[in-house]
Amino acid sequence: MLEIYKKLPGTNCGECGEAACMAFAMKVKTHQRSISDCPYVSEADSESTPVEALEKLDDMYERVSNQMEAEVTSIDFELAAAAIGGDFEVVDGEETIQLKMTSKPYQFRRQGLFEGGEPCHDSWVKMIIYDYIGRQGSKPVNADWVPFDFFPNTPSHIKAFQTSAENQLAAAFAQDPEGIKTHFTKQEGREEQGPISSDYACCLNLLPRIPLLLRFWAADSEFPASCKLFVDSSADAYLDIEFLGHLVEKFVEDTANETGAD
Image (cartoon, rainbow, N blue to C red; front, side, top):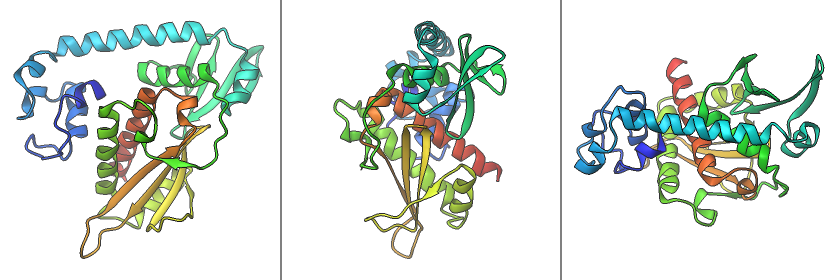
């Protein structure tokens, strides 16, 4: 979806009828909208992103995830589980690594990635988890909170996405500032205290060794609701920065969907 998002202006102007550019990109990806519905997308970009092109992207992602799967299934499962903070188990003679991503449980086996006992078919979920397992980062996680642009060579669209993600999360709880604590407690969030004052702050594990710090400020008479996201400075040792952007994207999308259903 970031392939589509980075073609958009990122201003959340609302002229397309959606609340934010990220919401519009999601609908383009799922074929509910055409990218040409954005008045600020160039004709060249509009013509280069037809349904067929998006389907080719999906095919490419599937091929890449399959290649990564072939590499990572040959690792030492017990050592890998210890390195990534997963749980190693042998069930009926089959080695398994249990881990959670954005509070959802996954099982990694020699046959690949499973969710709820069934094979996972989401190529991006597989690529993120396979990259995380394969890297087996060794930097200590020390609550040294930084924004995305802290990391060298962070792509500009990832930096732009952070702002969009923060705006989406702020909007999700602007009318229900008390509900944010209830929602993230359900998502296994842990309330945090720190040197920066905010109305609410919590730490959640995107993956076992990749914590995310969320700070929220409720609207007042002078300022609208706002949100800031930070990751640990060790995050790039555990996950490629592009995958990290997609992981936060997934977290924001899940939050928007869940709060919409609450």
